Length: 310
Ligand code: SF4
Image 1 (cartoon, helix red, strand yellow):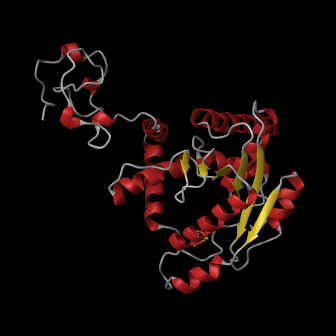
Image 2 (cartoon, helix red, strand yellow; image 1 turned 60 degrees about the horizontal axis):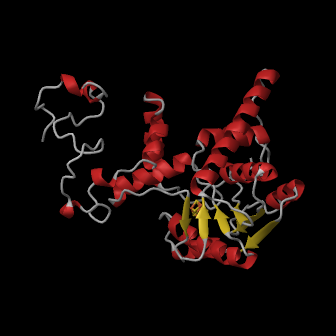
Image 3 (tube, rainbow, N blue to C red; image 1 turned 180 degrees about the vertical axis):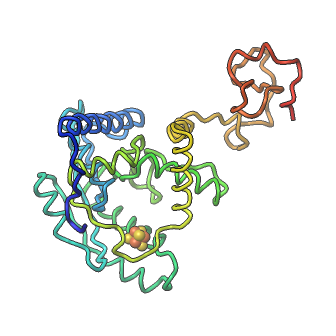
């Protein structure tokens, strides 16, 4: 598959055309919404689009290029790929593609592969060191290019997988935001695909025939815990369609007073305000949102003190 366009299965051409237009429109709308919601890109920005050669970063670049045509603000795009010198990396693929699209780009050659091979014992996961090294290089390049934003291709499903990894293994309520300052404090990192579903990016890559570069060249096992979480999310979505969207919405609707982080909400100083508060505690309601009695408008039918009280 190296460097070869992905071919879509032959279908009814008119239907396929309609679906393709719908998909492209949906991606542009979702990326546009994320840009507006989080103020990801503004007038005069120089956006460094990190391109790995995978479907996500190709999709991100393509949609940003399309949006730039009609955006009410002027911004520049410079695509950057880090050639980590993995064996078999098809170095000509990205320059050819970017040249054909007329995109300003820079290929950075840095042999992080050898470092990772040397430092990490065989059979151990190499991704953590590899990512750290890559991050350092990309921050440096962003500075050299005068980039005001670093755009990464993480999508909705990556964000949710990260959320559950932190929840299950890290003891933290923390996902991957659409916008954050980099850990060296010098750059603004943005994720324009934050609202986009991975399956749409797969379909978009097929539709556009992006010359994908496989992500297995390093020979490392991808993070097993992440794989398990992704599988869990896929199974949930299959059994309960709409659950992923619901969880993504939940990340944008956080109630610190209904969690237990004392740094976010001053529980110790809490006193009754004397006025009804729709967000206040419904002390005797059932605790399970799945129970029928949880539904709006049924409170009046409940006995004064129900079994949900703890
Ligand atoms: S899969 Fe390979 S290239 Fe990707 S982060 Fe892990 S070690 Fe690095």
